[in-house]
Every structure is written in C-alpha cells, then in structure tokens.
Image (cartoon, rainbow, N blue to C red; front, top):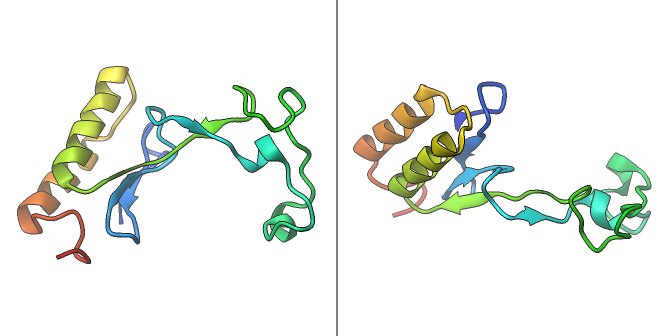
Length: 118
C-alpha cells in the first residue's frame, strides 16, 4: 500500500517489505550511484533486463550530477514519516493530503510502522 505515488505529486512513500516506511527516490535523500554511473556488462544479473550499459561518459563511473540518482529513506515510525513529508512540503514539493491522512490513520489504528513489526 502506498501513501502517495509520483503520479500524484513529488513523493512516493509506502510500506516497505522490511517493515519500515520508505520514501523512494527521495529528493531530500543523498544521491547514490546507479547502473548508469558504473555501467553494466554481461556478468551482472541485470544484463538480461537492460543489456550493456556504458559507464557515465562524464565521470567514468566515479559519480557525478549527470549519473547519480536520488536515494531512498526509511523510517521506523509514522511520526518520523509525517515529519519527513512536512519537510517535502516546506521544500516546495507537492504532497497529496491523503498521504498525511493515511499515515495519521495508520498511527492511530496500528501505533507502529508496520503490521509485521511487534
């Protein structure tokens, strides 16, 4: 279940299978290397999906603004996730109202970030 998706605004937040709440490809998170940074050859398991990908032509795999992508952030509580969404709003990102409502409702009914954690 997602609280919001990129099709609704600038944030994609959901329950992660590891029991946390994830802000995926978060514009606030530090940038991370991608397969476009380091390249991809036939020895990589993703080769069947993407084929050969050359390392970044600007930095040759070291990591630069052209090839780095937003990372993801994980939160252990609904309160942390709500505070994070507020940071997005303060930054000027579009966050649908239902994201806040969903997190508040889950906080009230579950009191923990995931039904899988005790």
